[in-house]
Image (tube, rainbow, N blue to C red; front, side, top):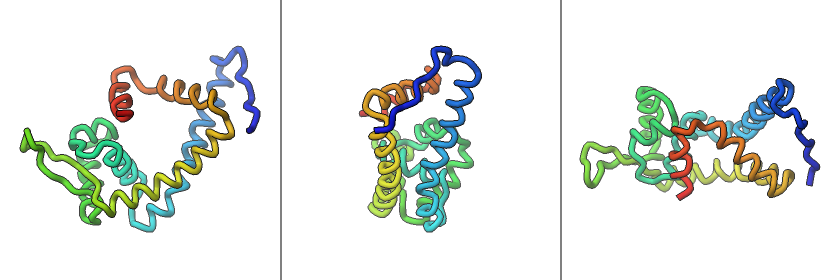
Length: 161
């Protein structure tokens, strides 16, 4: 296990905040690059992956719920969902109680692709978690959750169910 560099007691100063921003940026960039080639092979990008990921996490998610989770425009989501549907990765059905609702679910091919992409992410994150240790993982989660506005945290919590 790598020994983490302890934060300065003055962890709210600019140098420490900048280090956090840089580590967040570079860590996320390297994590997402691990799936870029697999996405490109399918003619897809990161927006497609985010949609696949959240549809996998919440089968039968409504289009409006997915819009809120992804925080993108209807037009952008429409394009992404159209491409995923054309490729046979996502299917849409109407709601049982409200026929106006469009419920989204991965097809078998979509679930397989999302599983492969997740496995690449899991390997990277598992290695980082192992290196940092259990205590650091909880702290990491707490910091990331603190970045989510209070008004949006219920969406994050709902994904745990």
